[in-house]
Length: 255
Ligand code: PGA
Image (cartoon, rainbow, N blue to C red):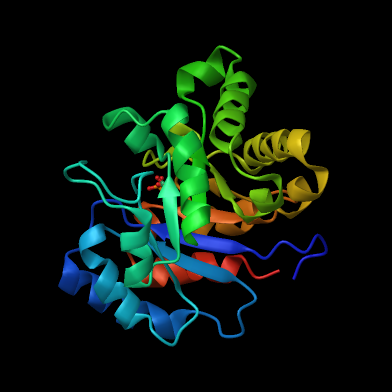
């Protein structure tokens, strides 16, 4: 465990990839490649259709199985949506919220996330809240303003005593799926700013909250990014689809 006491966390985000059988095969290949001992928390965020199969394939291991979205209400007339209690009953233990692809293509808003983050916590799911600026916002010097509004709004209704349980993923939109990751210095700078934003509400929570970096993380650049003092882990998209590549990223997180 690093000195600050934050356990490194590496999570794959499969997005809309892998059918049920592909998901099962992937987990069977991945599990033997993961380090024993629990020093690093490892998760996979998988499509709804594969959740049950992945929970069952991962049974008995420490692998955390997460969804990629959820509705803030427990039930209701919301055709096509899935709620936290539905996920919990499947054995899911976490959920990605506010991924930039959901913000861009599915009108996800900070206001909506304000309900989703506490709803996930209340149901017993670990939220992975994604934040990050676009290329344009960075060029115009708006990165901090954007991160401030995303973090403050989404966390506004999280009770103080549960703030440290939220995992935040800083994912600059320009780095996602582009092959062009942030430099370690850019990741460190943005993530320490995100941590300071949490500190505006609670200093102890800011010390304990884990902030991950996401955006074109791969085996080749993981160690450098994860070596930054405030980078507590990674949310990995494309490179998580291959068990060997993903396992190498996990290995790079070893303190
Ligand atoms: P990427 O995606 O690793 O493929 O860039 C990261 C993410 O969207 O979480």
